Image (cartoon, rainbow, N blue to C red):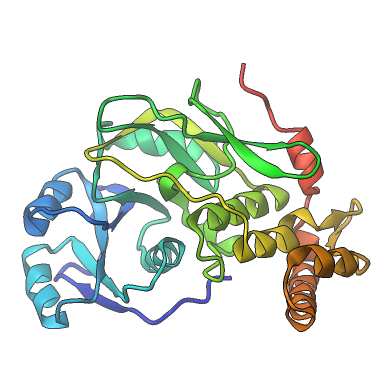
Length: 312
């Protein structure tokens, strides 16, 4: 799943992780926001991260970033094409991270919690694929960032609720934001770059994480604030939903392994709205993927949803 597009890395002079810094890589992702990149990164360097990886669109020359990196020895620049999606950027950044835990944030966010050993102890105790922070809007409103899976028997969706306490499970990290465990993230395959929709891409990783026995866990001890407005995900089902469906919802679990029943190809052909050849090809590709990973499954999506802890 971690098949990635090509990218370029530009690094400063420092090649190793500082022994005095918190053992945490910051993966800083950029979206539309004006500001002084040098000053922003210099402020982040003061926070105490072991290293910072700044994801940049390769609109400037490598030489420009090389000059910038000389002024920022703890910063590495990950240069990607403009069509590289959010999940793919995270796959790349976590793959290159020197630390075993990676904090993923946007450049329009600010972490209010002091960066110290207490944060890493929370992450260690959680032992989750991703420890998800509490998020506040730029107007200081608490964001209902915990995603609870619900089903009416036909439609799967998520119900957003506020993070009421630490340890609440969430299907996926809101806006991709959280502290990822590199080892677990890579073991479950990361974000699927063939699902460009941010919502269904996060749903896919979220369901796969739980179906394979891992989790996302909320921590109220870590708080992050937006400094500008953010947009909501488009949750319209389409081709991305169908890939998510075949890899997760359509999989049966028999107590030993997961499998995609062959009989389901007929209903998929009828309901997908795809051409016959396309539908058959996609179903067979999904069935092959499920077969290759069959022993990773620990439960079915139905069991996952029915056993999900409900907020108090």
